[in-house]
Length: 505
Image (cartoon, rainbow, N blue to C red):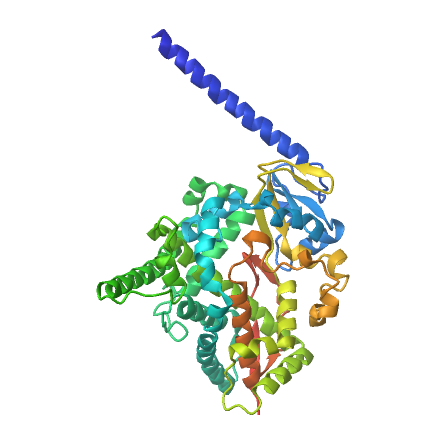
């Protein structure tokens, strides 16, 4: 039995050496990170948590970027995270292969979104899926979606007509959430839903908005709340898990049913000698996509991508529309300029529908949208370094989790000036925007991992905002408190914004 004892000793030694090697690597990574500046008040165990860095209003975020305008270290509990907040420090991360791999934080989405384009840590898999799916977002394809955006906003405006007649305000987040989900189903999946008009039978019943709200709230709590919740088995024992599991099952059923029906339809057409010549939409692309060896996406990969685009295609757009309408209601001078622009485009027409050719003419509305994206952008995106990265003379080592904070970038006084909290669409006039570093404005990230659906979102919010302003005057409800931006994956208002709507004469 001497050989067995020797084997045990050998295995124990290898295990011990691996632990020592991992510990040594971790200490080297931390030693490099500690050379970066760090906001004061770090607790030895809780890190910056006691300072509530992600509290509603984002004051800590703005104060910190004013004090550390290039990079700093955020302590997430006892884990240090270098945070980049300036174009000079962000650019090397996002444009080079050094920062092409997403961080382990994206695993928090996996039960919900799987390993789709937005959450995959496997760079090879991401590149392959991105290549297969890019054609679904070609500009020629996106132009065909404009009539659908008009159809979806027409349903919403019917509801707004009723609210205006009753003297009731619009609940922006709820109504835009339903409208944008309707739009993503009709465009990406060619599925005609009635989600804007359906009502839950019981308060405890799930719909897409309540399910999505549960899921994003849970991810955010695990990401910025109790650090122990990032550990999967502890999360499954927490009080958050039953509701999370129920919401995941709900959204997965929607995606599974869409894929199942479409695969059956394509199969039946093939059997009748009438196979689709080219994909009609995103769902067709998923099912028909083929690699050079003839293999396609697995059912699990299709489900992951559908869940990703159903979420990203409606939640972020709905949040953007909420802030756009808030800014237009708060600043009537900008509302008037946009309305004049829309009226001029639609002059002498017998319809208020926006066409794809109109989109480029909505120039002032584009300025308003870009400034809104700047003011209320996402916050932390993160990568895992695959090679050393130099940040202001500090060399961060491979394996380091590095974040770049888009909200802080867009509120960095050294980039946007001391008036960064003012709503000024004129910042994006060509002569003014030319003075801003190209990496000073990243509402959809940048580099190879930028958002594949950014033009989809831009076109949709243009159509929706133009159609609403053509029919209604907007104003804020008197007595309502100033909305506080609250980090919940996207930067949503802490409490739903109410907009008073009045039909135009």
